[in-house]
Length: 323
Image (cartoon, rainbow, N blue to C red; front, side, top):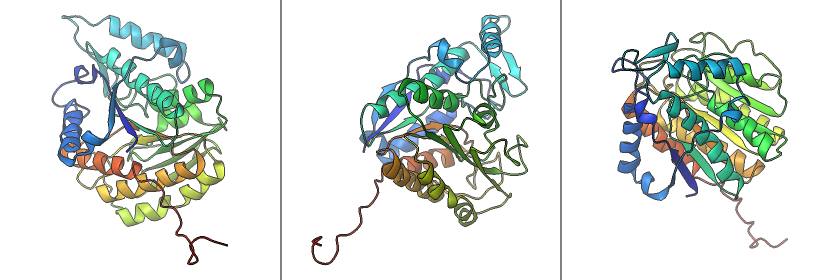
């Protein structure tokens, strides 16, 4: 297995209280399942480093970046929590956690680009795909995946990268940031209509959206996203990014799809096959949603097992491969 898992030192310090669904317990649950499954022992592991402030501007407006830092600087014993949006806050440690979470994506890019047949998984929080160019939203402070994609294009002189977002909530922030950037193809599936009430119609021609009705099962999901794979192969990305949200699971309380961990394994394996065909197996996956802790942990295990499954080579013909 060639997967390297990136963690951060401050993710657990970003804690907005026991009633907030995006809690440190999510990471504890994933680690429990990684250990129980044995996947933990066969992956590589690395600590993420905070992103350099200058790279935040790859996805965000300077005034928004300043706002986040300024708000973080107001935190004190007398003012322990500030809200950037109705559902997205900062406590002491949150800004560092957010910088590390964004940095993890760039660290993973560096690692996968320095070899072949490599996959990186960023087991970090806060998530990112709802953060727009100039605002926090949906538990997200910085748009980790948009930053990482632009970082790869800039630092490795790539011409094409792809983002696949399978979180149950539309990645409106990512779409907002990369719409019209023809170097980036975005494939996105999401429950619709549903929070954040966006995604259909799409904003630009480089975005391939798949709205899915509430109650849809894994069979429906697989049928609806099946055309992604040919589209990605035709686009020929040099690196594939995944916004890996697992809140479409049937046990998740935050939405109404009926997916299982088998569906996440299937999708991850299909995407690994595309990466093998287009970009020497290089994938960077970043954790987004998933709020039933047991289902989240099991789904992440399935996701990593799918990413670890290389394309099966075609069988040799009956004369031993001789023509």
